[in-house]
Image (cartoon, rainbow, N blue to C red; front, top):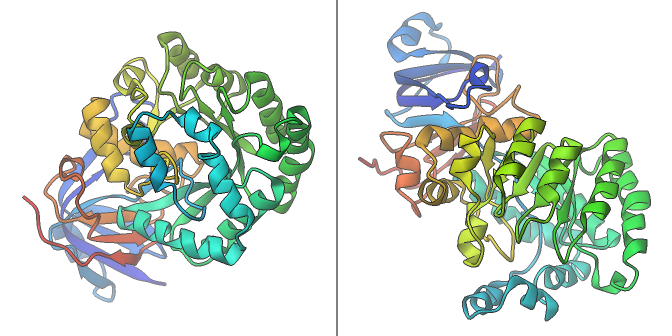
Length: 419
């Protein structure tokens, strides 16, 4: 039985499971804290002075050097598996080209799909792995991973198999999602046939082989209509998979209302969101996932109305949207900074939005997302004095160390204390 006492934590900050329905999003803080970890789970949380006296001497002791301790971050919307990059498109957008203009010229998602078509699984794994490692550096211990850049089944299957192989070698807990992104170029004149293939062949294959536990659809102009999205997602539900929706990124697409109608696990993006749509999501119990790095990187669409979403009683999560075209970052702390500035979120709300709320979206809140007895010992340590300091020191290096199930899986080289 492995047992560790991590003591002399300067400040421990965490949301608590029992506060799940408190929209004020309170957090629990404990100074000079210690955590007793046994068999990968938190056994006890108390002050260092207390646990140093009561925990058996045989238990391994680790000095936390008075660092800040927070739960492992949960990134609940990411596209980390692809090959190549689309750096040139970043500059095309800066010169006035729209997302739709770039796509119409053969760029965008279709450009990535062409690269995947000619790539082997081992190449996809090799190019994708560094993104998982960088995500870990920023404190992410649970990561949702979408396919979606293959478009055709042959390529999508490669992405999902690559994810399966990556899950064998990275320390993070991975949640896999089959994303129905856009109609492949070679199917553009057979749109209805493609939707039928997704419904009758692809989703049943994903479910039967356990390649993903969720289906996502891009409900937007230029992607899939509300009716098409409804049909696709209903098949996913019938196959026993959970569902989520890329909704309202470029306008009031109807995706947010569809998420409420179907009881999706979340509605993601939501850059365009009316009060009526917020109320529909709140009443259906569907949380919103805001992706501020995407808005920052694109520079042409508004930030989701995060403050208003919370004030109207919605639950929200923050995620990186890590992807080759519109949000090439692994930094969830940067997303916290952007949400603080442009969404007016408070420090306690930010912590909930990257820990317990996204853990609930992914269905893993019983095991992770907070520092509580019985849960996996997933956490990170930071050389900063307060929770507010994580988004404050934006663009800096990430956590000093990251632990998953009681094992230290990342140690940063730069542990210079910040004040």
